[in-house]
Picture 1 (cartoon, rainbow, N blue to C red):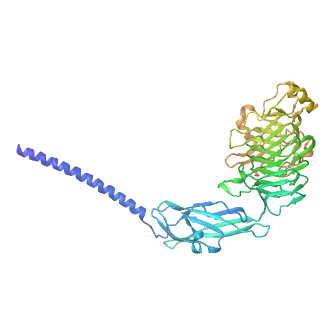
Picture 2 (spheres, rainbow, N blue to C red):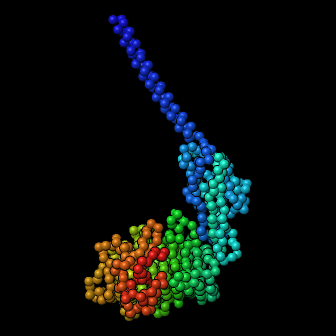
Picture 3 (cartoon, one colour):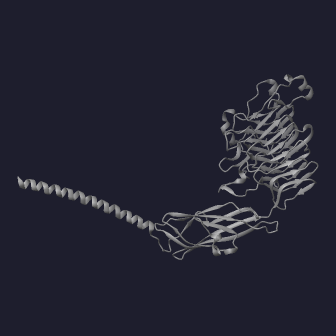
Length: 521
């Protein structure tokens, strides 16, 4: 009996020992694994086959305005190896003469002697961040200037690698709070950067030659109290845009974004203006025409684009205006807003595919009322136009029955015969059923109201991701061959210089279909 108890006691001891030994073995194994992992993490190699990888081969700044600092560009430096790499030296090839500014993980090479930085470590499967900026001096020349440099990396193994640095700039003229008080002409010699605002004073005329570029700083705009004459042409436009030349993402420049500057405002005293061959984009609004009266022509817009705006594209109140062979598109507000007035649109594309908000305005908003105040719509004529967009109905407005105005109001207005008409147009709106209303729509085609989400398929390119648009109709679009052939002789070329005279029938809108046409943005 005693022997049996002893054997049991010994067995229990052995079990406890085995259990304890198992625990010790597990602890040792885990410790060895951790030590091995730590050893791998802390180990560095001098193997010459182990090198750095870069997120891109070069850092390119294109095209900057001379004397204005660039935005920051970022380069990632990767170590894909299983062991760490030590970078003993990083330097700018141009040394102290380099125009580039480099910061690597917080170490500023600009402040270092000869633009060198030392002793960087890139652990296994880790990376460093390089930030680059540049400011290029004015050259005194009208041509673009390019400066190159290289950022060198020397590894502990002795291997050297480099990334090219390239920056192109152009000299510009700078205007700050400028007022044009006498007849003046701006040429395409250099871009003109506008700060605060540019005002054309009453009695003065500002003429802009073809290819002139006006680049507006944030919150800067243009106010025309006198007269503005833009003499651009198809292929050689006068450009109104932001002064930002950098990218928000690699694929998306700031120049394609709205609300980067203000816009153009023609005040009440401004008359006889002409915008021929202009490209206005990226502002808070495009063109605003303040109330003048309909007896005299206030503004003519021809062969132009007004697009990608954070407000209304073209808005007029009680003015006489003509818009021909032009695109007005993609605005957070209305593409075109007519508050009374006398306006004629011919071969125009009003396209409301603004991508950044579902609360976008109409492609065309017309009426005789604003905030319950009556504004007589003397004339609104649309011939051979395209008016479309994402919404089921993009032709809207506010109306007041003139017969219901007070006697005093009617006497102030006089006898006005209100008129609007659509002739040979493609319209994304409800088909009129009232006979009197239907008489205002002559030979029109209506975009399918049940297929509003597919209306973008009428066009060559709608890329809401990269904000690229080409409103040339595709081959099977209903826009094809629907314009009035008797009017095309007045507009023989579309907005890209393609002939309307070669087809049996012209297309509506400002773009003519061409077989196998490529995106020309």
